[in-house]
Each structure stands twice: as C-alpha cells, then as structure tokens.
Length: 224
Image (cartoon, rainbow, N blue to C red; front, side, top):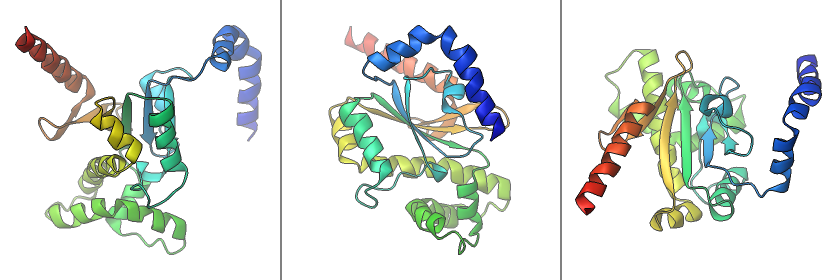
C-alpha cells in the first residue's frame, strides 16, 4: 500500500504540475475516446501502456477473461459500459483483447475445481462456448501450453459474438459506424496479434494493418 501512496504523492508533486493544462482540458472537455478497450483484469495488462495512449483516449472495460456476457444474461456493469460507450460516447472501434497465460482460460481448459470460487465459476459460464470448442475441436492437442494459447484465441472470437448481441452494438454495426477487433497480447514478447477474417487466423497487428491499408487502396482503385 505504501508504494501506491508514494506513487500518488509523486504524481501530485511532479507529474500533474508538469501537465496541468492537459488535465484541465480533460476536465473541461466532454470525453471522446478513440475506442472501447475490453480486456482481462489481469494485473500484468496495461491497455494505455500497451497502446501508448493518454488519459481520455481509451474507454476501458476490464473483467476476468475479457468475458462479455450476452445481452440480457447479466444486466450489470459490462452491458452498461458497452451501451454507454457506443450510444453516448459514439466510439468507432471496440477491441476485445485476450492475453497469454490467462488464469480464467486456464481454469476453463483444465476444468479446475472452482467450488470455493462460486462467482468465478458462474461467470465462466459465459465462456462455455469456448470450453466446448476446445473440448470437441482440439482433442488431438495434448500440450497444455498450446491448448491454453488456443483457448485464449478462441475465447476472443466467442466474446466478439457475445458482443454482437448487445442492441447498441448491433445497431451501430448495421449503420457501419462501428468496427469490432479481436486481439491477443503476448506477455513474454509484448507482441499483439489481431484476428484476420480474410485468413481466419491471428496475424501480427502490423501485418493486419498493411492488409487493411492494401484493401482500402484496392477499393479506391476500383472506384476510379
């Protein structure tokens, strides 16, 4: 706790005064984040550090296993955050970012006993499709590390489908005002991989951007 208190003192004495005008603008302006960033509660993940964004640039939702309950399953903070981000803040992009060595996915894949963690056990039911996909489609893969990595990747896709059930999201997508992205962050390397619908695989984020730019250029050429 002392480290946290010392950090606040350092922020108040050194960081805030050097950027006071920036923070004053944040207080005065209506927030307009670039994206809604949904990721795991894992303490090793730092969305702003990873994306090199400043305060005010990301609207962040953190929950175990970056799980998004389908609309109506839980009328809680997740649904409210998503609805507000899309309907009020008008974000143009939503990112669901999983990560390697995810404890929630490990419990899901290993069928760990969660009898002493009833809330966790109940919440993981919103990733039941991930468990079923792993159980039925990846039985031939025995290596635990490989299974966990696959579970993380599959779970991002499952949660993207859950996200589409939220009315505000579905309506914004229909208007072509919202884009969804599936990312996986590697803890050990710092690399980020994004799901490519064209290849149906995860590719390095910079490669995906090149593909997007190339497709955009191709469409422009066809329009000429």
